[in-house]
Image (cartoon, rainbow over all chains, first blue to last red; front, side, top):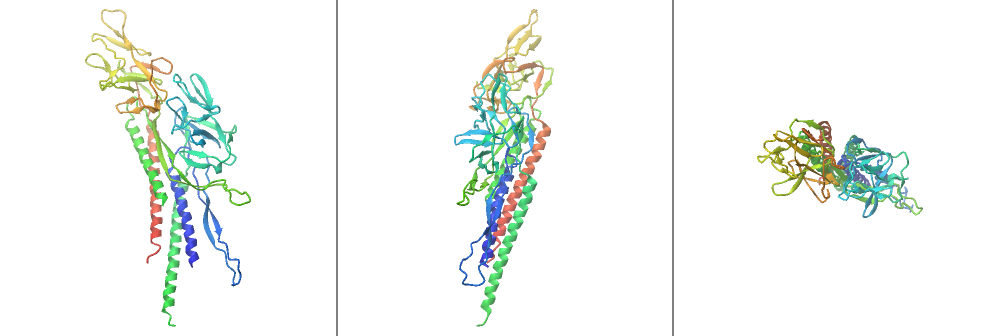
Length: 247
Length: 263
């Protein structure tokens, strides 16, 4: 009886957690280079009593625990913008961003220049070329990024965007601000990694899928709540019925 | 219920998105207008379990961590400084810049502002001014007996004066450029101010390296594409609705919790 309540509670906690994941995906439906996460759950078997003085033996109970929120690494829609410093990444490649906390990785390729003429992200963090940050002099104009990542102006080539990939990209940690961090070292992206200049990769959140999950989560939550209510009524009725018996 | 706050950030972001888009659409016929582009970023994440953390004493590792995000934020509404189309107007003081330069405009309070809007005119003293009557640098005065005025690609202003065979040079219109044009601050009236982000203005003239050339009798249209903006508007509205659905769902889940026990 108590177990039904606790098992139901573990399911509700997991569903509330999944709702948080869906809400974050939906909030970022317009975030460039965003990768959706999904919630994954596991069965957790309660340890059983080892003593077997009583028959029948203790049976195991299943609870729900969340097992992680894996990244959905599918390609987002590529939208042409016409901005010369926008790049959409095609493949499993990432751009490298220099932050005070070390190297971070991003798929959001809408780049811009700061007042020193350095190529930076929208938050002003330098984007790394293969030989360090890329900068333009004040007399340069007509900046362009080619499909292989070569960055040039009217006065010639200024560097090549460093593109990296990971053996296990699903293990990337989300840091916020469109940045990922990795526990393992990044390796140079292969030749199949391409850039689409003058375009950006939009968020890969699939609104229909998320809304469907949202409805499922909500209904499941309510049905668990109903189950708990019912078992509570059952218990209170049992108590009052037993109290009515004349000894 | 964190989901409520998360969805609320999503709604606020889309609301600002609609504001930016509607401002772009409102300025679809504004001379020299540059459309704004909104950029979003995801907010902080809470890590319940990091990927790669040990899951047993046999060195097995968690393949994926648990990251719960807290929504979205707006980082910038930078202008897309791409060239707009040039339209012929047949007015001698209409100028369009083909390239990356800006006109220098002196405000009545002495400040210097910058503009791509070259729809100029003469004031009562024959000075070249903007539509609001602000002086175009370096200050060019056209004699009142001039019969025709020509402005070439370098911005050199020449007037034909009766009794002279050669045209009279009146001056050269200055242009400036910035390392980071996107960092300029808009103050309305098609004018921009220099900021810490844009860098110092670099002075020059039409035809100079990276300044572009001037085109007399033409104006630069705004670079807003109505079709693109309208499809963005629809997408923004739908995203707003979806985030409100998340709030509704979270609300109903909370109400399910509160109704579980009725004493």
